[in-house]
Image 1: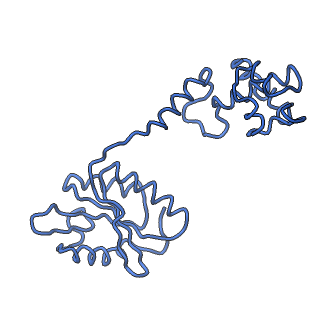
Image 2: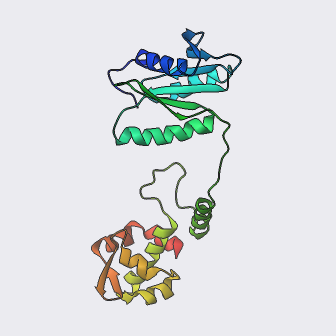
Image 3: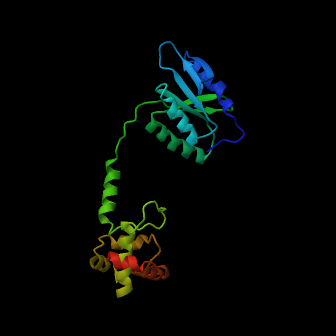
Amino acid sequence: MLATNLRETDLYVPIKQFLEGQGYSVKSEIGSADVVAVRDDAEPVIVELKTGFSLSLFHQAIDRQSLTDAVYIAVPRVTGRPFSKSMRNNKALCRRLGLGLITVRLKDGHVEVQTDPAPYKPRQSKPKKARLLREFAKRVGDPNTGGATRRGLMTAYRQDALRCVKTLYENGPAKGSQVAKKTNVEKATRLMADNHYGWFERVKFGVYTLSPKGLDAVSEYSSEIKNIV
């Protein structure tokens, strides 16, 4: 994500002033490094400048880690939701790579250190792992192809919905409790009420039938219905 009408050199003066304010001696274009800062016997600091996040920026920064552990990337700070999302993602990437991240607000030269270089310590999420394994266990067969787009994937939830579709198609309108019993989908009533795919219609309280989209799903997912039930 590149900022327009900017140059990497626009970042240099604010970065230089920021580091000098912390007692560093700062020089530019030393060897392959954009910015090098030295203070007494401390680890030298290297900052790579870019007008926006890019793969080449991370490649350059990783290469500089052969020279020092204190490697930062610096980009202009701009406004807008796309940049905010990009910041979150790239800040996380910097942490994983052991890089620091600096942003520069060019209208007033404000420099902000978003994260400092540090060894990455992965922290696993037990709830996310539980959801992953639960989905794996509930899904029947392997109906998807690895690398496919997320849209239209055959999830365990979709398989449960198709079980409900099959039951209504074969038996006509039915109470949610009846569908749950025939399909072994414990939350069949809630699933049909939420109607995430638009396949169901409520005939009266607690009783559901197939919508026109549900009838289309019978033919569209005929092979999947055959395999999951």
